Image (cartoon, rainbow, N blue to C red; front, side, top):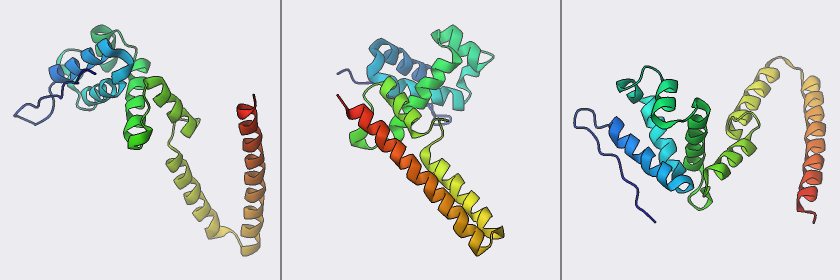
Length: 164
């Protein structure tokens, strides 16, 4: 397997230069699927540090003219990189497609599952402030019924996936 180039840093700000990051993308495009992580990370760095402004007026213009990418394609690569970064070492997706599928499975809206759970906990705290004990019990019983129905549906869907 070909070793990927690590970006050098400029002495002025110890950040990778636009040329360093573009070299990583060029190598990634040559290797295709094997290096989506490096490509996504380099695109993220270029965008987050505004390095594209050295040569192009807008992010979209830079992507289209320099790489032939749509903005959506660049964001797919960056999201796949983000997914790989949050995976455990033994569970890193081998391809970009696999990384994007895993991210989509976490939440249909693309928001990480942990963020959804935190939002639900905040909502529960707000309800707790104004509901009586009886209303809280009723609410939790209704939530329990919803969760039970959801688990049954999940079991049914899993059985369909596993069935020959």
